[in-house]
Image 1 (spheres, one colour):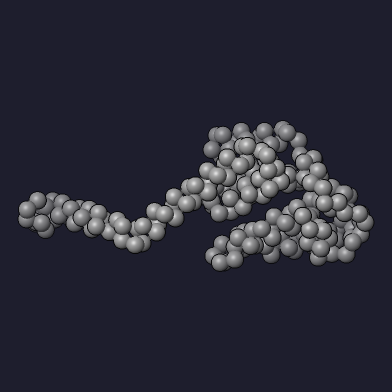
Image 2 (spheres, one colour):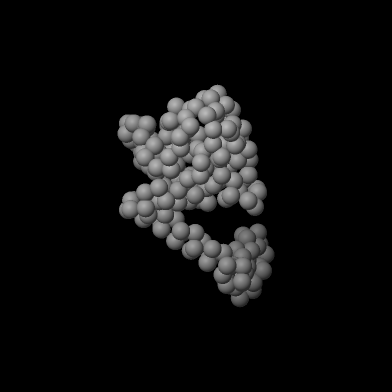
Length: 200
């Protein structure tokens, strides 16, 4: 990760209040909801995650710190397992919005946080956004089998969807769709006393 002071665009040794102000400004600027129809939404999502990580790094150091370590260890502390367990329970019951609410209140954005957030977004239909979180989790813990398996599963789903879309756009299913629509139209006509296709 880059120097968190650089990411948040603040001077080294900034106070907690200055860190919070910079974080709020950038988080609002790069929040995914602000870039839904933007072609650069993936870049905004990555920047949003980077801003969150920088904020967490500095707040865990207590602010006003003149030293910066690129160690990932600060991401792996600060959130109790109870909070993650609660989020997983909501996810298991299909209540992904409540799980996101719980996760949003966890200050440390470690690998598990990114993974769970990603799973929530994927299941709410925001696959691209969810994939970014899961990719981030896999980067933070490359040996975690749960994260890498889920990432592969999402990527395979995306490839399958893109292949189907490509084939459909090339006319691969237009014959079937045309026949289906004609049969449906004929059935409707016959129900009303008409006949669109006389041989059926």
